[in-house]
Image (tube, rainbow, N blue to C red; front, side, top):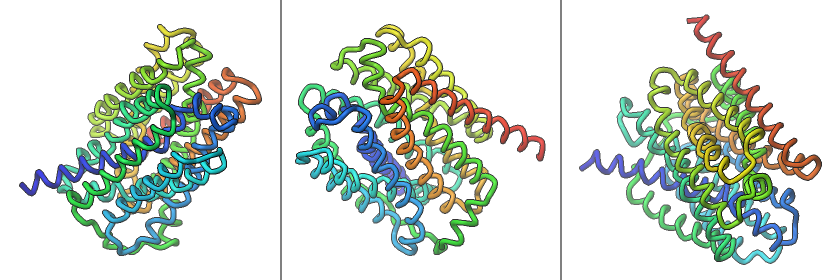
Length: 386
């Protein structure tokens, strides 16, 4: 019975990250209907992803220092309450400016949840089950790609983008209650300070993880933040079918989240290299081969397969290469991940408005390829030093 409750708690955490990823990326799925309704361009509408991402990065950095002795489970509940507030304000937002204010609450929730979720997941199970717990917890991210963002896109296209935010808000309230009931309290034995965070940032494994996250996630979200207009304008996919394409992307992403586990067991640095190289090749296919609905049916799942493994692979890398600073390293990587999403959306919007989709996708390819080279360098030097 106790074991069942422990694993039920881990599943609840996965549903929570499902909500967080969905609210973070929801504007991507409804961009093509939200932007004209609020009277802004698609590039400007991308700020709905940029603003919360930057704030989430700041919040993630501060969270370990601020919460100190607080039960990390309650931090997760607070994050989900912030999602409810964000969604409620989004539903009634009369202008894009008000929507951006609502997205500030989303940024707070994302930063809080990402900074402590891995620590709470590890606190639910014995150490020998750590890898499995992380895989299950982070499967919520793949699940959001499978159901969250595509369903939100479908709701946005058929009922309205405001209703998509309303559905996520209700789900967030339900999950907050589940976490309170199912998840065991987790307290950190060490009170993290700013100097400890700075020391963690100088750790070799953390430095490489942050650099990889910056290159790969910025590169990924330069294009993915505008995947709806890319599918509609580049591949000729009808707006009502965008949700289906994102569903294919998400199903493959969920498969990738679990499929990468054997690689991570053999060695997280090698697993990260496979994931990053696959993401680079997928984006190259988007650049060179995405020219119709048939090609989209092949390329979107391939792309999603590798992207779905990025979160769990980078967290496993931190757990393997920075064991002495796990909580600090997790918070730093969470901050980098969310800021990278924000920067990717910002850069993508600027390039899209200034030079068009081809230049935007090409920028993604270059950045992720640089990430693959960095991952290969780390793997080579780690083996040489072994």
